[in-house]
Length: 256
Image (cartoon, rainbow, N blue to C red; front, side, top):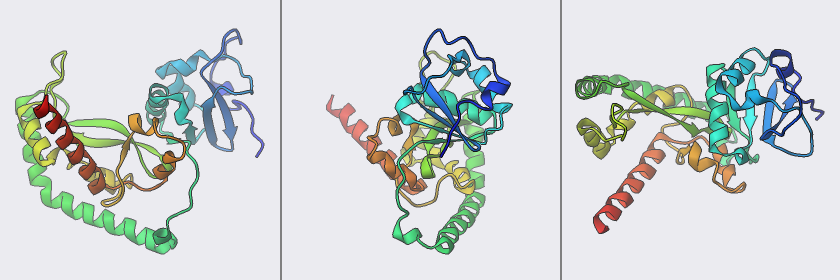
């Protein structure tokens, strides 16, 4: 497919003289912007790529609908683009290898039935536990005057980046983050993960499936292993991984 370099970004952003290199190469394919490591294709140096505000403004005023970024650029740069794309209301994906759909999802009808059923179940569960979540929110506000939720970047189906929602378990008023009393109790029983039902309702994860990879871990996977990021992660699978990692840390602390 024929590509052109920066057809829309140049129209909405200023470009500096090519007196130094930048950390990536940008390619345009229809309404997608591909962000790749520096290659053989030369392009002008664009300081805006290092600044959140200018990058956000640039994406916001461009006709780009989807950003696909290479994980080789590292967590820092991927998160910069993710933050800017989210603020500009643009979808952003990690650029991963394509894999064939699993046989159980070979039928589009079965795939949609699974998604719709999980969406309905998540709504019922969320409605049922809403009094508990309200109580936790009140207790958190009493103990710590801080935002109720923590949002961090995770990788969903086909490499799509999204922010997973959890109840905050640490204080934010000190230089060193410390787990609060209510936070320790929520971590013990996994109640901090209850807001992830909102991610299920939004279609970013399913109720059941493989683990949900953090952006930090996903960019460190090998290209072959990154293919598993094509699958829809599951809320329950992520809880199991988190509980296992928590038990390992607990054992390490006892040994030391």
